[in-house]
Image 1 (cartoon, rainbow, N blue to C red):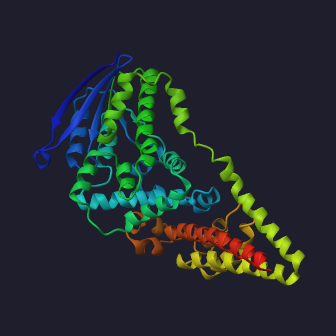
Image 2 (image 1 turned 120 degrees about the vertical axis):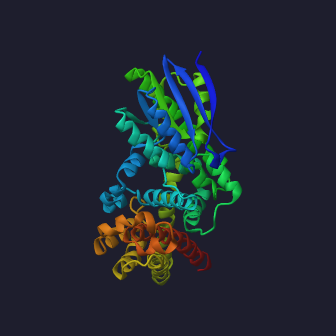
Image 3 (image 1 turned 135 degrees about the horizontal axis):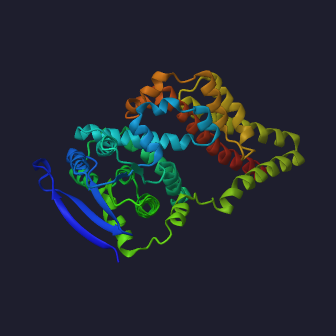
Length: 413
């Protein structure tokens, strides 16, 4: 059986009614000390520094994935991002969501007068000084967000993204209840829970899966490197879940568990077929229209171009795209909508990137610009992401509107 010890350490007087929980678990002769931190408390960073200074640990694990770790140790990482590859690989929406999350956390930090991820920075810096290995045990944020996306019903996904953006640009201060939740929870959970209608859809991939993932990573590290005592710096919202994983010994094969939780669920077969079915219906409508009369068929094609291209161009215009990018949206959307393998947004954003290549200063200002609505439009990096998202959305709406218009014409002719 694993041995579980628990103690509670008092915070400084500024948080005298709060405690920082610590749980120590022994797994395969390796002691794992879980320190639950409050992301909005300077005392948490101080406690991390204090524990590392004791010299009791031979490794320090942090609730970070490689991507988040890279940004923390090198804030200029975003300046190295290849926007064209991001667009080509279909990652534009994911990058926009990541920027929105970062902006939310920045707004939260500004209200409390702290630096985002302060306790993680201290853990990394002091571990390096003590010549201790730093273990990045969290799952990649992109994988977590994709699993969240697949766990949320398709009709809620637009609301999910819109809500995330709304939480960024909101000027409202956090309420007393929200502040307490932020002190006790996980920073990603806090970001999403500000607007999520149904947190049950988010809980599994956002919290419990990561409890399992980080526990499995720690078991794997203990087994492979023979660590004697690891200090684990995690958000307080993960502490009980991870401790339970160790107590129940539910993870018998950590490698298999990690691989399972790193897998992106494949989309439903029906969801993959829907775009092709829509294309088939549209083309069938055109064929029937021309069989009945060349005038009817021509009118359908014109409606398809004007509605689909017009709404995609409108989306690009709302994002303040270059005039040639707006024209590209109008011309590309009617064609790309008949080919599910490529989206209008991809073409339009690529043109926008070519015409208005972001400067280094745009990347350097990302952190500040993404915390307000105006900044998303004035920064060329985020504007390209908006061009992609809004022109794609316009084309998608145009496909359905034009489709209904075509079959309305068929039924009335």
